[in-house]
Amino acid sequence: MYFNAGFVNNIFPVAMPSFVTHLESAIDGTRLEARRIQTMHADRPLWVRYDLDRVREAVSPDQFASRVSSMWRYRELMPVEDEASIVTLGEGMTPLLKCERLGHHLGLRDLWIKDESQLPTGSFKARGLAAAVTMAASFGIKRMAIPTAGNAGGALAAYASRAGIESFVFVPVDTPIVNQFETVQLGARVFRVDGVITDCGKIVGQGKERVGWFDVSTLKEPYRIEGKKTMGLEIAEQFGWRLPDVIVYPTGGGTGLIGMWKAFHELRELGWLVSENMPRMVSVQSDGCCPVVRAFEAGERFCTFFENARTIAMGLRVPAAVGDFMILDAIRESSGIAIAVSESEILDWMKLGASMEGISTGPETAACIGAVEELSSNGWIGENERVVLFNCGALQKNVDLFDGVIPMFNPENEADWELLTRKCLP
Ligand SMILES: *Cc1c(COP(=O)(O)O)cnc(C)c1O
Image 1 (cartoon, protein in one colour):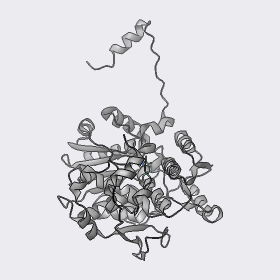
Image 2 (cartoon, helix red, strand yellow):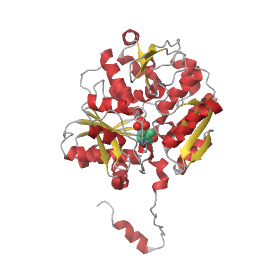
Image 3 (cartoon, protein in one colour):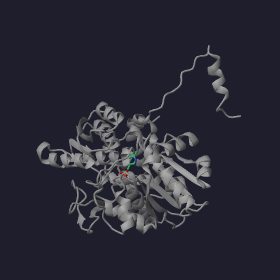
Image 4 (spheres, helix red, strand yellow):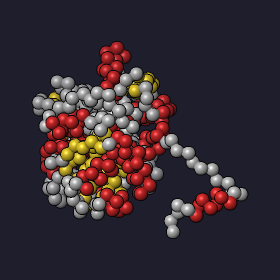
């Protein structure tokens, strides 16, 4: 079991210096002071930069294994300065699962799923928000707000409540009831908006002055990337500091793809990688909302707003991302690709992943399975390449998608027993 008290008292017995040197504008490289609250520069996101020479002297990769089993084991590559200020629910170090059966079905010998569905609040939004709330708390912020397609709201609510911070969450009116329920239960003040996530984002922007909250929207503060970056650090450690050939990522705001690509660069600069080979980054969207794919195919660095965005994969329903150029740069720099899959097949792929491997796969992951199917059959991914796809949110968060009818079983009824002898394994 994992207790926060134990974490704070025992895991980091000495003070934790931060190795952060500064923040850097992702659009024009301007340097900004890190020891104060920063949001964006020229309306675009910021990178957190570290003194990697000092990190290399302070820690070596073999030391991580004996540390806390959470993303905070990589503390030298995280922004936090004071161990007592870490706001945690034990997030991180999720299983990396080899998928032989699904791999065989997709024509791949070395397929893995990083199962982020096991994180607090059932999605990988926990990583980014644990980092963002930790930093906000250390800056003395008392009130935070977020627009969300679903999972980010629940995660903010959880970490804000954990830190004693007030949280406000704005959701599109058709957000799954599970997300609304958990966010309310976890202590946020939740409001529904007649629109999509970008409409919710405008309200959060307008409320900064009027209500005095801190805007923790995707990439509008620098630390959610640092939390999501730990997915890349974990994969590296779990594979013995050798990165996979291909990473398949369902892309909404793109924080995870951007964060992992940053992590891989930091690891390479630290000299911690056994091989210098970097993965090809695959960005997956639904054809019902695919601004990144359109920009990628058109050779553009920025996305155009995607009108009438529609997909059952709520995590992918982001018609415009403020970090669009960071996503597209990472894809291109890695020799990767952006691919849109058919919205109408997502439910089938979802069942495939879950029933073949027993992993709680959501619709965003289903889209990734569809993408791998296509990229494997057209030869873009080779049979022997090591492929990691992300299961970003739990199946259970999508109960709204269940429209089946479970048959009744009556042991007195012989016909029901006869039913069991059909459709079963020999
Ligand atoms: C947020 C979310 C995504 C998209 O993640 P980004 O890093 O914002 O691109 C995908 N799947 C699920 C389940 C999500 O909650």
